[in-house]
Length: 196
Image 1: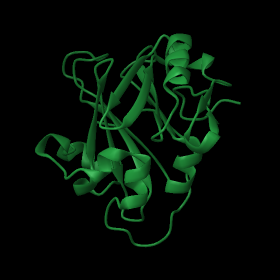
Image 2 (image 1 turned 135 degrees about the vertical axis):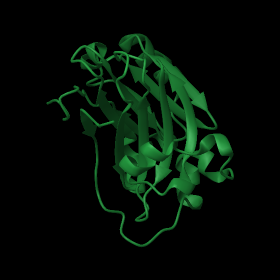
Image 3 (image 1 turned 90 degrees about the vertical axis):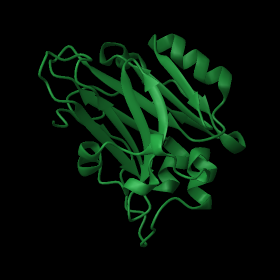
């Protein structure tokens, strides 16, 4: 298994020695307010790569054959974890591909989290955007249509998942968030960086 390609937006240290999601994180991702259920747990091989505290993981859902979780690090950063399973965009015998993007709670509130994970070939992978609670539904639907993407709304979390080939159109898409603010989706590629 390996994280072949990974893009992370808004990395910063949250400081402190948090032991899991608290009230502030639950306001941003309501699933953190729920007790962890057996289905929320990260697979062991994913937890080793993710850098997240396994007990904080919450399953967000599946889009385009990729499973997504939210979790926090020991330092309190919020993480988006993605796993492309064996058999999805893979050849027989390929291991799953995992990627993680972590950011401070304050940056997540302002920007959300974005991740780009390469699959087993240059033509396969996933680009995803996890939005803070309160994202404007009409803006999310517009973004999804612009990117020909799937939208997962589970447990109070909104996730937009797109093929890497479509992600180039994300730059400049604005989505309203809580208290009259907005965030702009970054353009990601699967080479491991945010595009200018």
